[in-house]
Length: 449
Image (cartoon, rainbow, N blue to C red; front, side, top):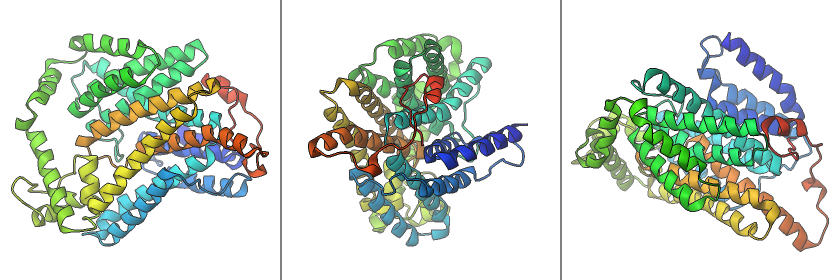
């Protein structure tokens, strides 16, 4: 039955994609982040749905009258250079065939990133992407939170199989990342029932993070809360909600959860942390020995761990357990330098947005969204220091969203400064679609084509 429902959803959205490429981008994000093909058990289980949607979206976009050139800014330039370098490191990888799969996945994700930067050029489209990201990942927050409540927190919460969030630690970090975005939607939604539903989603997602038993995610949650208090101007409701969940912890989870969290105080003596240190040492050894690093996921191979062993390094292949050491081991020191430039470019986009809308009251929603994305980025980058999620598509989509937001808020300023009419190729050619805006509690200027 699940397969038939998913098939009907995919077939139903195809005509909409052919009419409006933006619908294709949203469907692409949904499949990439939620992985609905992993939630079914029949003929669609594990199907490459994102490939089919990407191809249909590309065809629709090429046939449309929309802008075809990817806008050049610090983010797109650094992403292009990074992917060129990653292609070189994959060619010279210790095991190119082993590294190819993640290279191919990362390349497809960057195509989606460029599609967002190119097509998401209105407020409605940007809002729609936020909704889709929150919906796609929040599904597992609600599901995990409900599971934790029903089982009394006795079992760990995991993500969908064969996905980048299958591991409980990865899922926990991703749920932390979307909490600020969920709150942004709660604040900007116009309908009371939508705001109430989003508040319930936030509560269940908080419980879901706790149910992952991830110490890294729990630490990232604390940092995110602190960053929210410093950066956000969106009220104290989320902080109150978080405090209520923390106070309720003894009734939500068993003592084993507290025992696991208490090991954070003695990280140096914890076996899991020692294994992370060993993985970091191996990644560093690879980067020191090879200009191009070992290629994607190289240190997960046993023979690589043996070849680049040193006192305190890995004995067998393991994940890098850090987005920074992961990139270092995969692509060398130059690859890590490019990755840090990508992160800085993503932060620059949000900071520049805040400057651009400082004296523009009608753009305060953009300022709120920029601050919210900064909070999400801080949580992800702190939690990612102990997890292998450098190429996670959800985080790259978040960076793309920040770039699209800056391009949107700067567009009126550029047109006003030029004193010229807006070129035809930059004019929205589609009618507004208020029905979708009303359904999501969003704005009435939602243009999706």
